[in-house]
Length: 532
Image (cartoon, rainbow, N blue to C red; front, side, top):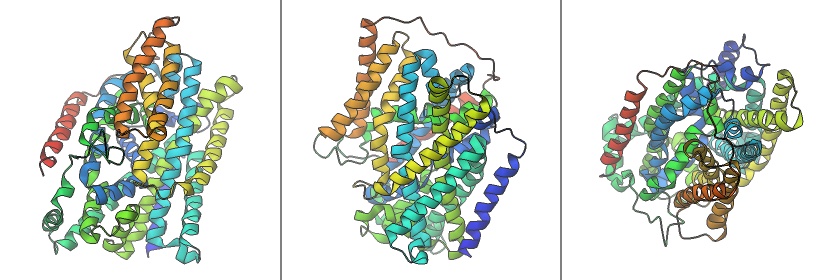
């Protein structure tokens, strides 16, 4: 029955997406890479949520919440603030320029070399950090629930590798043959499935704990360890203990918001859905709906970890990334586990597909078309994109087994590695918008300085400073370096943003009101849960 429900849901998603794309042209640049610029707000929100929420969240964040408490919630709820900025400031500018990729903006604002450097960094970050961790955490979940190694009569490590290869291959097929629109449609269905299945885990657990009374179950879990529910961490961000701290509260005001701004307003795999919007109104809807979902998502990726502590105590503190699959097996009826794993598969495929499609877009348009064949036809360019996806998928599958045994958990590892790429790129893009005097030479200097600064301080000298604080310090120094270098080198002509005339730029009339609501919701959440 578990396998049957798994096959039925997975098959339905594939059939639905294929049916919706039956009349679409996937042999053109916009058709393949941007979904024909036809995505609506609901589709964008569903795709953004699934692109972001994958097994590294379900496994990694619940594992961290189990061990460290609700302080991990900051990664999620502060996203709403960044999405507000994206909807009101960045989306109108991106769509006005008619961009296909973020590196394309950097060429318009600075020069081709800056675009190429950022394009290469994006591709490396996808293959070296995000994709392997997504595959590995997904394989952990599937192995723990379906016990693939037992079914195939192999070791647990071999079972995980087999699952990585299977899921990675399936994800590559989706991305290669369907393009962005296939990814977006499958994300929407899987997104609904994720919300249902993800909420079932804490609901069933709390009903069981409370003997049919969910609120009673929540009270019991809370009384067992009230300190776990506090969202404000007292960990040190500077000095002794800072390096092993999970998320000191003070970092919310330094590097965390820079990271959130980059991820939700500049990261290619996220913003590509916005660039594929049918108009500005739908782009803003998609971003702001996602902001609301991100505030509610901790019910799926934080609360189960707190419940797991009630069930298991500190028995799995040294193996926190296995706690979520254990909880699922404990509370989920056997016949529902197939549906649950199908949704998990969808979450893995979503993030995996999105990153592959974005990397292929960046390489095909930003590197191949620019340096290798400037006169390439759209059909051949799409073929190059498909080949790129295949090669990158193979690389990610090969790296995935090596991310096991992260000392502070897989989610913490992902964030630390992301800092190598996110903050330097963010500082260059933000400087491009806010500081007209920053030149192309200054931008390249800031990019290179930021890369080495973070790696040396965090991984070389291992300074007694939380890595998110290093992000904040790095961002400020990058901006200073860019201004200093720009002052001493030749200035370019002043950049003027031009309207491409591709899309309707009329904003959503409720965008500002919805944004105020999200900001207030976020602040109230911290005020309430910070006093637990």
